Image 1 (cartoon, helix red, strand yellow):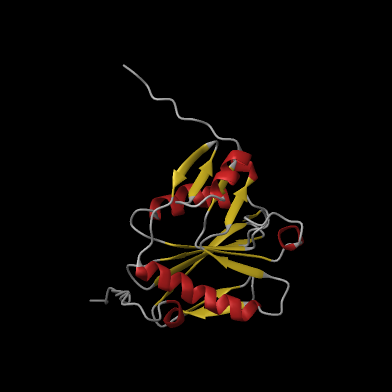
Image 2 (cartoon, rainbow, N blue to C red):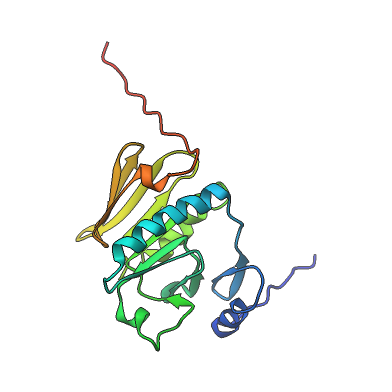
Length: 199
């Protein structure tokens, strides 16, 4: 039996490669993985969130990016491309800081899709929570109006869920987003919640 050996890239080789034209890749322990393409719905949702965050953060010491900004998780030897990331850290925002990635994000957003949901909920979440700077991780469903925020507190992480007609607060950035704003200009259906009635 013949086994294939995967080439192992250094971080420097990976970062140099990502500056070239072509598909983007995430980097985990020396291996690279091509990014999946996004749907119109995915792009609209991410754009809606970015628009709201950009307006809110204008004039503050914080910045947000959509799609093309990598997050370096040094303890996992990994670089990921979240759908949105926000940072207020001087080490990310100084003129002499790396221009293609951040190391101390305050908040990260992933818009879920069938092909990436398991990765976003497991692999990425396990990696992201190793970042001491991270205060909130938001997952946005594109199959139904459903948003989850995992928020760090003194004892660990707590989860908050919002559905159609509700709003979700990003305490780390001091902003509240309604789901109608998040899902504006999409056909994503509201969640039907069934409750058991007493006999």
